[in-house]
Image (cartoon, rainbow, N blue to C red; front, side, top):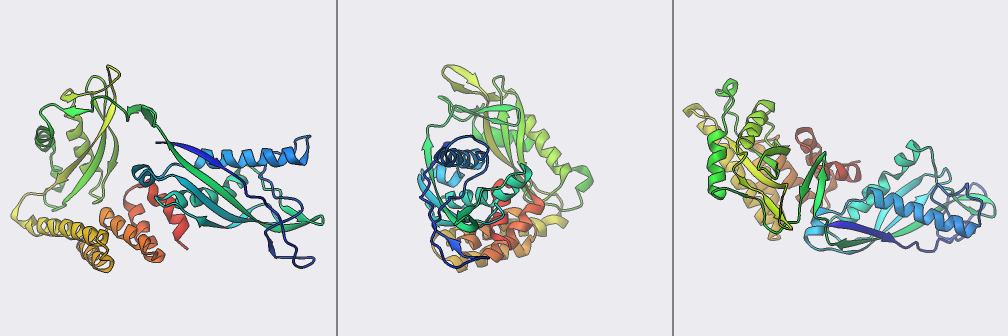
Length: 359
């Protein structure tokens, strides 16, 4: 869904406590802090304040991405952020004062947390608040409104157009079973690794164009199998070309995407124990997730941890446990899991969360 981002500034005023070298954080002041970009205007203070409010709106609007969870759950509302504009023109102590869930608070906080670096890169700073002509530390509250609108028909991924709204969806000729059989028939275990007993699965997102040609636009190697396995997965997916019924929008075929998974299973009796461990770990992870969602949090964590003991570097299991820890506000443990995930696979949400929860 498209993000319509608006916010309304709370009145910033300052209460005076203390004298010179004051380190008090004021909630009201004679001169309000202003976001940079408007100080050179030859106009009134009121106009500069309005310009600064618009500039801050643009900063959040350009950097916030509507969280996937919030889109799926149709969450809308206002997140309120609070931070301190320091005497040097940078901000500190960004906090979520009011959250609406669905990852909106986390996303707003992520953008606020990156503000200082963005200002440094642009050689800009806030104009700090002032009392009696003296620069003071000032608290600013910023309500940010998240509102869903009808999504556009398509998105741009890299250089590719991918439709997300269509009248007839993309399908594989012969159905899902035929797709599974086609992938299995074209997926080959790398010859150089036939004795390695490596086992695991990969998720891929395919882009299928109007003529049914296939391109892999995303691949997640959660099991860290390596590029040789990734290449075989891409070849198997590409071999499905011209076997698709493209999506249709307004009477025309359009490019769209399709998510698939492929599994690499070694052959030979010497690898059976590894295969059994793979199946057991997946079952444990499934049980753990189900228990956690049922409110049995500690039991769910234990099951996920058992799966991780079998495959310590599996990014999928670590990601699931990291989410569970985060939901329990156990940030240090969530940080440790997400840090390990990042060494194996790129997940945008993980990269956004790490700076917020890791000390």
